[in-house]
Amino acid sequence: AGVAIARAGDRLVIEVHDDGVGGADASRGSGLQGLRERVEALGGDLRVISPAGGPTTISVELPCAS
Image (tube, rainbow, N blue to C red; front, side, top):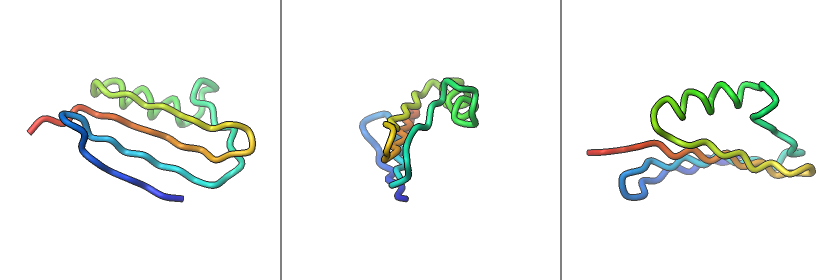
């Protein structure tokens, strides 16, 4: 597994990836859906890319003003 965190303009970008079997689906009521709701409440976006057979990548973008 790996985690990358970077700032892109006025956004904080967090990417988590693994080499697992894939198949993660936030729309099935998993904990990923709860994370998506929290991210969206902050004005952000959460994307899950997890094809069957893997790997899985979860990307989060959050507003980040300074």
